[in-house]
Image 1 (cartoon, helix red, strand yellow):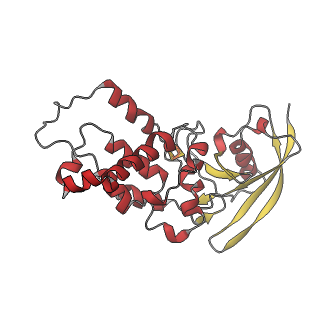
Image 2 (cartoon, rainbow, N blue to C red):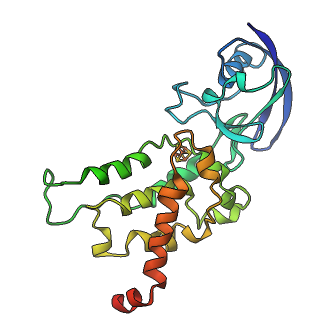
Image 3 (cartoon, rainbow, N blue to C red):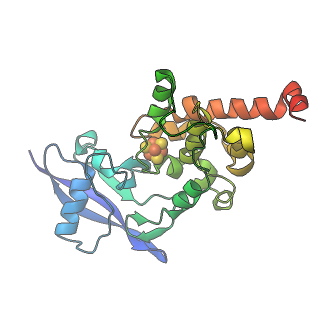
Length: 249
Ligand code: SF4
């Protein structure tokens, strides 16, 4: 069954823009990205939209649908009433380049600020051994497709541009947690350890665990419970535990 859907799409660039209404044909089984493509193929050939796999795995088609951060390719039209107005806007946390396409380079800057895995100096490649339980723990975090929806929804940077320098966001704090939980990561042996770095350089203390990041993650990664809270606990132990402080001195 096909019907006429009502889309309200943001058109514009860094200098400003507007929401425009469009009536677009929708067919059974389609997702929001199908309608955006149909709009591009008909009424708006210059509409800018980033996409790639259309299977929820490339993390490219992130946008806000009715104000909620979502992947356009994974948002089924059947989740809306046929007479509902569906608003499609670019992610709010990042600067707009054109229409639905944002400049997400903030995330690549933050990614470069997380030091890479450091194996123990006395282990040769090929000698690394890990328990299956440790492999499984990081496996969850490695499902991340870098859609940056968690970065988009996080109120620490969504509503406060001035926090962007000090705060890396849930995606990259999760990366620090993954490395901290890696049994062979030896970074803490030679210099500041991961929880200290998370607190001092990635703004861990600004996160007040509202769980918004976990709610929007299309991979259903338990960002808050399995990455952010354990990282906060480790940072608090290191920094506030009087015995540990004495020992470190
Ligand atoms: Fe996207 Fe989830 Fe990765 Fe955040 S953690 S970038 S929401 S897949």
